[in-house]
Amino acid sequence: MATGLLQNQTWNVGRAAKQCAACQTDLTPGAACWAALVGWPTGDKSERSKGDRPVEHPPYERLDFCTTCWEAGKRPLPPAELFSWWRTQIVTGEKKANPFVDDSVLLDIFNRLTDRTEVLDIRLRFVLALLLMRKRLLRYEGLAELSASQKEQFAHFTPPPEVWRMQQRGQEPETLVLNPHLTTDQISEVSQQLSGILAEELL
Ligand SMILES: [Zn+2]
Image (tube, rainbow, N blue to C red):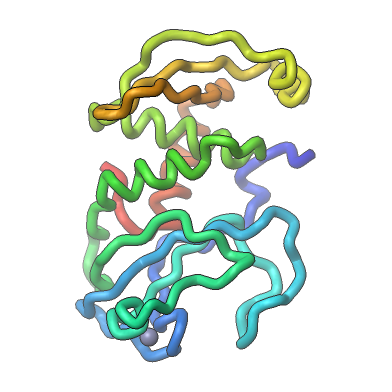
């Protein structure tokens, strides 16, 4: 089981790709494109896709597609899992601020991570929950008990994670969020990494 120390992970941080992931056409600054957040299976080091894609992937990666390819239905291929996608612009090198990520993208990622048990995913989902609370898209309802199987599953956490009952705006069933007791520094580290993967600002 991974210890989940984020600094040991490889991240594709702080930049959007400069080429379309499908046709390899250069994406020029200011050009409209589609960004897709993909997750790669943990520990998958096999090279199953074609082309010159590196053998090892970061756990999450942003891929950009030119509008022609995206509108023609080109999408990230398995084993990549498509988490979310959004229309955006390639930012220029000199430009200070990245565009702001859409709330629906954050919600997509949050919901996609629901059943994940990797430490990294639990941390990401918790930090997303905090962000979505600040944006008033998610409300804290109270604590729940860890189930017996969860207690076993998260035995390597000391202390064990808390379970937060949370309500998503406009959604009926509550969702459970594991609170892995991150420090303030870890929380800002995770949000910076998330912002880095998305190459967009979170707040
Ligand atoms: Zn293309």
